[in-house]
Image (cartoon, rainbow, N blue to C red; front, side, top):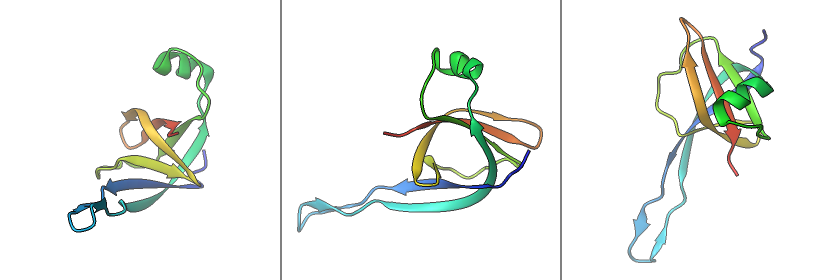
Length: 100
């Protein structure tokens, strides 16, 4: 298994309200880069997690656990939400689905 795909754990801080203009500032996104093995989610696993087949679902495996808080994961230009995570002895797996 190759851990050759960069993924980015994103933490999103919402913009604050500016009472003088009445607008909100842009969200601030901070990212942490990790290398992972990314593959399509098998149909059997999708049936267990989602109860059916879903488009845009991927499985990600890290060599070590990721401990810091995060809101979503970015792979390439696509943002994903975490639907299921599993911590093994030293590895961690995620099942992700696309954020529309």
